[in-house]
Image (cartoon, rainbow, N blue to C red; front, side, top):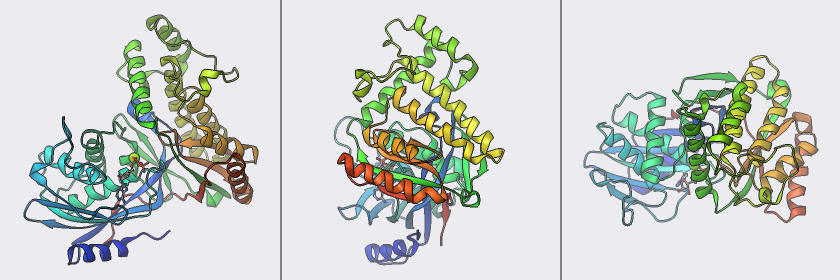
Length: 415
Ligand code: ADP
Ligand code: MG
């Protein structure tokens, strides 16, 4: 996939009438394993996609911020950096897509960093709203551009934190730190093993082609309305579980202590929804995506998921890449049955891929739509991909977009 660097420079010239001072890029990502663990201070294992957002930018001495994207309607958005405010009561003056980059400028200034005005133009190949984190790519490309234009000298993790702050406080999305860190810190040919508590990280070699394997991404092109409220509800439930267990975050519950922790929750949260044995067939409540999981279900997902991340990393370290397949598929079952954030399209993609011979598959990203990943033998990739596409057609679903993910580079300056 080509990086739209030249297109961004050309677009900048067309919109602003001069060449940009520089060009910066940040990628989208898929998460191999570790879903919803980041805001529980846990582990994640994302990899950068070749799909990239590029920012062409120049500093401005007058404190004006001008934003334009080839991927958004509505022309140039013009704001004053000293008037940027996170939305309070009343209409937000900087709503829409421009809130992401404007939020980065706000977060930097609020942190006391000497950031002034800028002209920015964006081009991107990251699909938006597909669970591939176009929002973090947009934020991190912006943060990197401003870091260079204003000589801030910030490290990638510091840029990731500012980008997350922008999305949390300025855009109003209560996301964890994974997406921004993946965009800022991933490197080509590696998955990023990240401890979301302190952002310590390790690059884990991830070269599937060398092993005759492939990672397919199935973008279901579905985004369910209930995503936002459900995310906040899951997050609040995890926090409630942590409080009831007397820990700062669920990451502190060791996998070996899970049965004991679930027993404690049953005693300490008498109003919690009834727990359901996860080895029983789905009941009606489970088939209603609006049905909330119990706190115990949420805790079980987070604790087992953190364990799965560590197991996946151990198997990759041992060169047993195929052995991660069942862990991915188990992760999907946990998101579907315990965390309850899957949907019919994601389940169909995963079930069909596994039935057609995939090594493993799972939904990836926040849930209720977006994308699934499928680990598959190179020789079976076409068969599996066709099976998924045909299953979607048979179910009357919108045709999915299927592509191969190769671990790409993280944020960088292009020119
Ligand atoms: P995801 O991050 O999974 O793609 P989000 O809902 O978090 O989904 O972010 C998508 C939003 O980010 C878009 O609706 C748009 O507002 C903004 N966005 C992302 N990339 C761009 C871009 N290149 N140009 C303009 N807006 C963008
Ligand atoms: Mg996003």
